[in-house]
Length: 261
Ligand code: NAD
Image 1 (cartoon, rainbow, N blue to C red):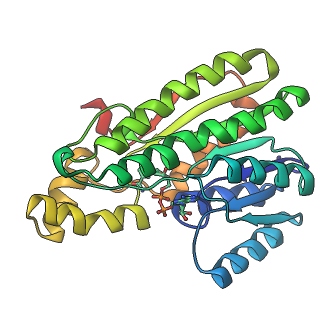
Image 2: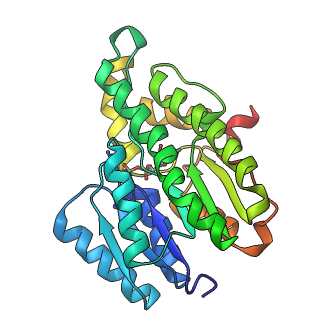
C-alpha cells in the first residue's frame, strides 16, 4: 500500500478509465474523491467499494466539470474532508463526432470545458497544496488525439492537444517542488465513451457497426486490439511512484502503436 496517507482526486471517475484509476489508488491505500455523473445508487456502491479497498475514506463529488466554481468547491471539500489532494487525475471527458460545418457550437464549448479547461481549474486549486507539501502527482488523461487528428473530431482533438500544452507548462512551474505533471495518451480503450460514439460515426460515415470498429477505430491501431483500462491504470500507478519522480512534462503514449505510424 504505497499510497497510504495520500489523497487522490480523480475527475470523471464514475465510469470507464476514471473508475479504474480510483480503484487502483484506493487499492494502494489512498483516500479518494471520485467525481462524475451516473446512477446515485451505483455511485454509492462504488464509493463503499473504494473504502473497502483502501481501509480509508472515499467521497463523491457531483461537480460539473463545465463549472469553474463547482470545480473549486470540489477541491476545497476534498481538502477539508480528506486532506489536500496529493494526486490529481484529470480524466473527465466527452466526445462528439461531426464534420466541422455541422459541429454544434454548444458541443464545442462543452468539450473544451470538460476535456481541457476543467484540468486548468483543478490544477489551479490543487497545486498550491502540493507545492507546500513538496510532493504531488498530476496526471492528465489525454489521448492519441493529443498527437494526431482524425476527421470529425475537431473539438476533441483541439482539447487534447491543448491538454499537452497545459501539462508541459505546469510541469515547468512545479519542477522544483517535487510535483510532476504528465499526460497519459491512450489509443482506443473499450469503455462507454468509445461505445457511445459508434452510432454517431455510423451516421457520419454511412457505415455498419462492424465497419466502424474495424475500419475506423482499430484501423489506426496496429496491434488490432483495444487498449485495456487495466493497462492505462498501471501506467498511472507507475507515475505515482518514486521511480517516476524524474518523469515530468511527458506525454506517454499507450496506443498499440497508433502514433508510431
Ligand atoms: P467514460 O464515458 O466511461 O467516462 C467519462 C467520465 O467523465 C464519466 O465518469 C462521466 O460521468 C464523466 N463526465 C462527463 N461529463 C462530465 C462533467 N461535465 N462533469 C464531471 N464529469 C463528467 O469515458 P472513458 O473512455 O473512461 O474516458 C475517460 C477519459 O479518457 C476521457 O478524458 C477520454 O477522452 C480519455 N480517453 C479515452 C479513450 C477511450 O478509447 N476510451 C481513449 C483516449 C482517451
